[in-house]
Length: 382
Image (tube, rainbow, N blue to C red; front, side, top):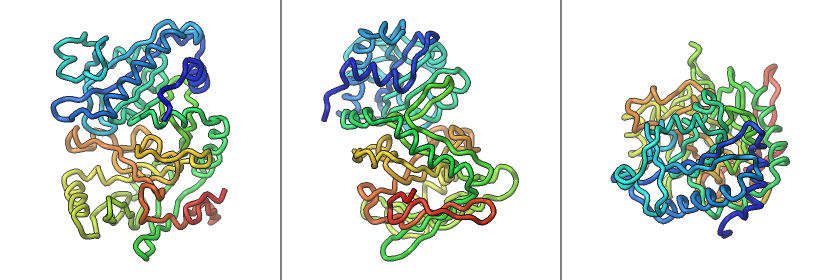
């Protein structure tokens, strides 16, 4: 594990990812903190420490990047991935390992979070709970660029050093195919049985997340390396054709979701996790929305999984449940019954994450009846 990036490496990373111009003056590092509902733990404490280290390194080299100010801002965690951000952030110079919502509210200077974001040109967000969805939405409104880094750890530092020019080419090869495709057929092999899922890709444009965030209004993950698309959700009046069975492995149990019209309608498997997922669908139907079909490419660069979605989803096929508006879909935080239920959660189909589920084949369907296989036995064929 590498302790941290050097000043030279951080300088190169910021230059490569954001390509700062003379208009860029402020870089903001954004981190969330524990509260009474969500307990702290060592990886989270170290992530906040890493953010402080980045602030100090960047402050020392800001002139070389053409920047005028480097800020670190804390905020109370949202409790779930991709929920809307809270009203206030906090400026604090104390030990980041000790930071908590309760401590900051009593000792730190509060700063309106939206106002702080509006004054930033470049944002790094190494948070515990993903802020990708709200920052994507806000970036389009306020014209900053943001690299979201939920669950980032020092184990991921090598992934920041890959050739993002080559990553971009591979991502674009998939994106152009998804843009043209009207459907995707996925064949899973689970417990000696085949399970099939069709995803309706009509009325949608794909997205490239290649680690290059050089246009104002852009926000995406770092490390990065994926092309993704939101399946059609039926918002145009015509029902979505997304249907089939989606398997997801939880520990040793395989949960089987019955998918109709782009929603997980019920769980057809048995077991404790199946019962838990059934309750989630009953309590929050928007949880079952299929919000993303994604294809990661970093495995080809020797990057290995670390047990965090931020990196692991960039290694292969993934399918997400929940919120989709930040990716151009129709399901937003307002479609959930309660703010605490808002989620965008990825299910990642690589052996290290789901060793009992094999992606035997992914075939894209194009207009006119043409088809193209892009994955066979878990490997890209393009």
